[in-house]
Length: 176
Image (cartoon, rainbow, N blue to C red; front, side, top):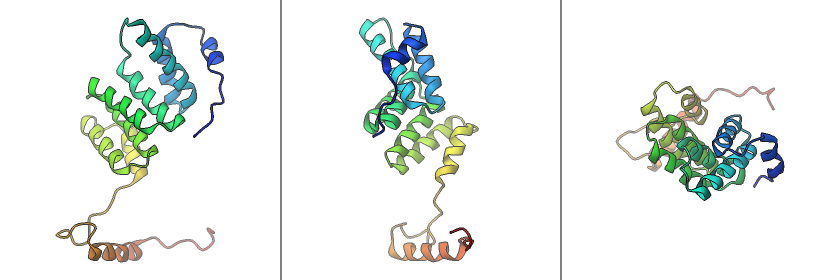
C-alpha cells in the first residue's frame, strides 16, 4: 500500500478555501492528473463536510473519483468500486464513471470486470478516447481456435498456444 507523503492539513490550507464544492473540483482535477493522494485528500474533505452538514449530496463525479483515489492510493479496491458503482447509479449515462470503475478493477486484478466496464462505457460513448485507449492497453483475447468448443477445453488451449507460437513476432536477440 502506498504511503501517505502529503500533510493533509497543509494541502487543505494551501487551497485557500473551505467550500466543499471547490474541494470537489480540486480533488477531481488532481485525480485526473493522476495525483491520487492529493485527490483523495480533497475529495475526502468534501465528502466529510457534505455528509456532516446534511445540506446536499456530492456530485456523482466526486463519488467516482473518490472511489478511484481510494483504490489507487489506499488499495481499497472494494470500497473504490462501490463508490464508482454509486456514481454510475446516479449518472448511468456518464462514460467517465465507467472508465474510473475499469481502472479500479484493473488495480484489483479483475480484468474481466474491467473489460465489462469499458464496454459498458463505450456503449454509451463510442468515441471516448480514454476508454478506447484503456481497451487497447489491456488488449483483447482472440476467438477460440475451435469455436464450437468452450475456451477452456484442452484442445482449444493447446491449439491456441500453437497458433500464438506460430503468429508471434520474432524477438530481437539484441533486446536482452
